Length: 549
Image 1 (cartoon, one colour):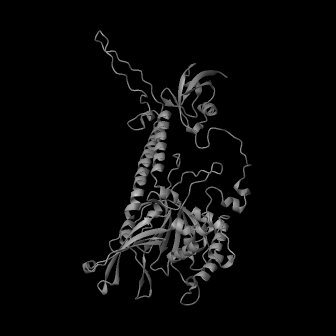
Image 2 (image 1 turned 30 degrees about the horizontal axis):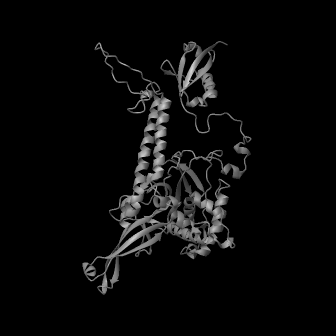
Image 3 (image 1 turned 30 degrees about the vertical axis):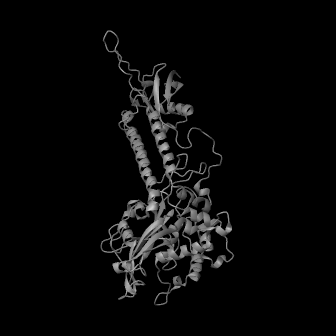
């Protein structure tokens, strides 16, 4: 075995490496891995302007003793050390049903349909996507567990976490029907239970959780309702008479605060987008007797949001009572909705003042991260030109500017060009440090009152996490399903959650399948096909004080 000693430069450090010329590029990369901690698939080794490949024959690259080789790349998460597994590897076929259900990427459990119970199944699946709700339910205790919907919900979600099969939600359904007899209504022919409105199920389940599920706040007498804390909206409304004569008679507008658990999207002939429907819902006309005028007149109620929860429920008001047929008919109109929702414009001036600096800084940080990622991809596609892939400031930009020209006494110009150049890795590390500093600044902009409210939205921006859909022409018929966005895989060692793949789970009773994000855009309605009825949005995550996510 013949070897050649070379010098490898990586992030400002030099490593003496003996290269086995009878080996391949892959072997050489593993040598560098043991020295730098950078995994072979994350390394970029440049030899004479070309990137070293795994199958390269090292005897044919023309290495010379003492030759300096440039290497770029950083260790991945958890990289940098080769360690023996602390637990014995267990194959999926050797796992119990519960162990298999809890593996990364496992298909979640569905729910069996007991005859027109799809409205309930879809509601339960979307609610289950709230991690904080699952955590709160685990610590919930009740003396009357058999008839307590909250206790039965706890048991149901626990069973669902232990399997990938369809679960019969019979115990919860019975408890719900005892608490809310409307869900025990029979078909007109008496043969089975009637179809129900998923929005009514959603509202009644939340009303039950609001009463029963409390979050410890140190003092038991001050324990907060989970629903109020994480899902409760507050509106500030101004109620004013439309008749100018009322104001002339001394009647003043009245301001009030109200708590709600959903934001309504009112649909009319002009509604094309979710924003249009929200605007419609914030202005309401009412007939009321004026004390000043001593007669019936029209009042306008204008509402603005004064508190945003971490989880925002949006209800498309697609159903209305149709007297001719004595049933809830469906508005078929197509109404689009975004994957990211900005609700700042619907808030009070005081809340907007707190949210806008954070929202704008979030967008600024995102742009910087996008630029870095775009440059990284360009560099990966074309490593030769990669050193110029970070925009106008190339990775080979000089660390120190050229010194001023000096004119000696003889009149000739002496040029001093002492320049040192940043490696690609150094430049990328510098950019990432700038992003981290920007995230620290972002954290410092969060309003202190909002920062103390763990269940509040601190930026005014939401990301879509769940959708309940309805297929059919009326609320009392048709079929309900649910879509829930897949979460990133959680590392069992570090606890960090990985990046999401953008795909969704589609829950069609006990049938569960994976669908692409494009499928969600098709739920805007426009006919009897599946259209969104309830959207569940979650406040976008913000960085911590140290600039990490």
